Image (cartoon, rainbow, N blue to C red; front, top):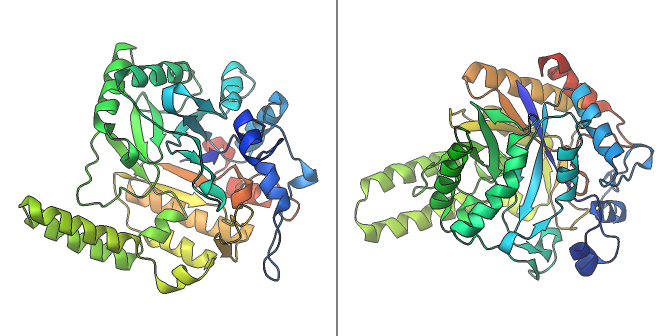
Length: 379
C-alpha cells in the first residue's frame, strides 16, 4: 500500500502573485489572515513553532521529504502549472527538488490545467494567466519539459509508466490526440507510455465519457464524496442505461443535460450550509463502491475559509478519527483488489485546512496516526 499526498508549491513569491494579490503574497498570506467564524472554529491554522517556511529554501524540501517518509507517506504529487505558450508558474520548488538528490521522497505531477484567475479564493473571474493547449508544437514543448522529471529515478511509475494526473481533462479540446501524441513520443524515448489519471470528478460516470487513454480515475476527496452520494449514483446508473438504449443523436443531448442536472444537484443541507460533517463524509468514502478503474482517495480535513468566508468547513475532525477511517479505507482497498494506492488530500494545503504538516493545535498527531496505519517500512 502506498500513500501519495498532494503537494502545493505556492509557498514562495512569484511576480504574478505579487502583481495581482500584493507584494510578498504566498499561501501563508491567506492562512495568516483567517478568522474564526463561529465558536470553537480553529482559525487561523498556525504551523508548529510558526514555521512559515519558504520553499525556495532547499532545507525545507529536505525536511518535508524526511518528515513525510518517516511517517508513512510514500510520495508527493506536486501540482504542476503549465499555461499558454509554455508559461510556467510555481515551478521552482519541483525544479530545485529534481536537482537535489537529498530530497529523496518519490514524486509525480498533477497538471492543474485551468486558467489562473482570481476565482479560487472567492474573488472575481479576472484572468491572471490564460490556458491554451495548442497543437503538436505546444504538446511537444510541454513533454520535453516533463521528460527530465519522468527520467528521474524518484518519479513514481506504474508498470514502468510515469504516473501523470490531469486535473480537468474535459477542458482540453483535443485531449485524446494530445495524449496519443505523448504516448507515441514517450515510446520513442524508451518508455512503455504514460499512466494518465483523472483527478477532478467532473468526468466520472458521464454518459458520453470514455476512459480513452486514461488508465484510472482518482477519488479526489472530499469533492468526490460530495458529488457522488449513493442516491445520485443510482440515478446516474439509470440515466446511463437509458442513454445506451437511445441511438438517435437528437436524444443524446437531452440525456446528457439530465445527467449533468442530477450529478451537480446538491442535497438541500449541503446547498444551504457551509458546514459539513466530517464523519458523514468519511462514511461516504468508506461505503462507496470500488472499481478496478478507480483509485481511492482520502482527506485529512477541509476548511477553506482562509480563502473565502463562504467556503466549506468540515466539523468534527480529529487525529483519532483520521486513524479510524484511514484504517477502514486501507482494508477496503486490500479486499477490493484495486490498485494499492491512496491519494491523500493533502500534505500542505494550509489555506484549505487539508494538511499533514505539524501545527500548533495537534502537533504531529495526524502524521503519527498516519504512520500507525501505514508503517514506514511498508513503503
